[in-house]
Amino acid sequence: MKKIPAIITLLVIIALLIGGFFSLKHFATMPETEYLQGQMEARRVMVAGKVPGRISELAVREGDSVTKGFVIATIASPEIEAKKMQAKGALNAAKAQANKAANGARSEQIAAAKAMLDRAKEGSQLAATTYGRIQKLFDEGVVPVQKRDEAETQMRASAAAANAAEAQYAEALAGARVEDKAAANALVMQARGAEAEVNAYLDETKIIAPISGEITLKIAEEGEVVGAGMPVVAITDTKDSWA
Image 1: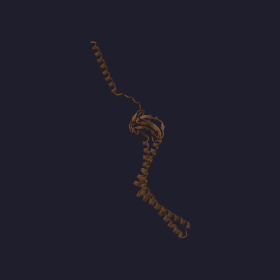
Image 2: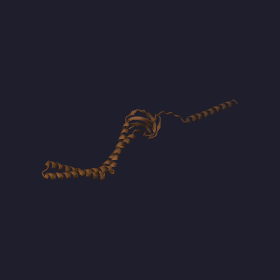
Image 3: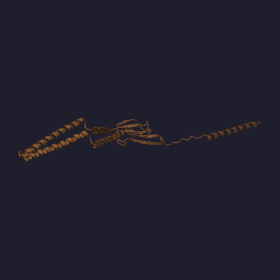
């Protein structure tokens, strides 16, 4: 009978050993959690303007998310605004000149040229008549040679003036010459080019986000004067990162 307790004790010890074995096996097969430390890097872009001036508006703060094309800041440039007004005035003047060349002379100009021609013809006829009388008196020995020469000079000058007036009248009727029209149109093209150049500079007063991302650094403040190429903010592309 004393052997029974000994057997029971042995069975208990065996059970404990088996349970301990399976417990150790369980813990041995559990995955081990590891904690790692590191640093992520991402692409960062320094955003700067192409024209100098004062920042009239700054629409972002550090930590803001922006999309590509968003207007980050606006630069105020009185110099560019003044050049725009000059370019616009030059273009309007060139267009007016081109229209004048294309449409020819106005009726008032034609009438004025005709009146000048009529007066020049009358003066030429009078000078010719006067010269004829003086020449007759010279032939009779009544007037000296100088008087006759003066009358002849006046007649020739009046005839030349009449010819010039007739040419001006003909030009007014015909309108501007082909080369004048071409020159006027060239001035219009030149003025348009100058205006387009100024508008391009005006577009550069808007500082645009070149990529989508997060404003991670604000370098300039609203109201601050910045030079061309001076960074205003930094944008970090959080989607383009690596360890």
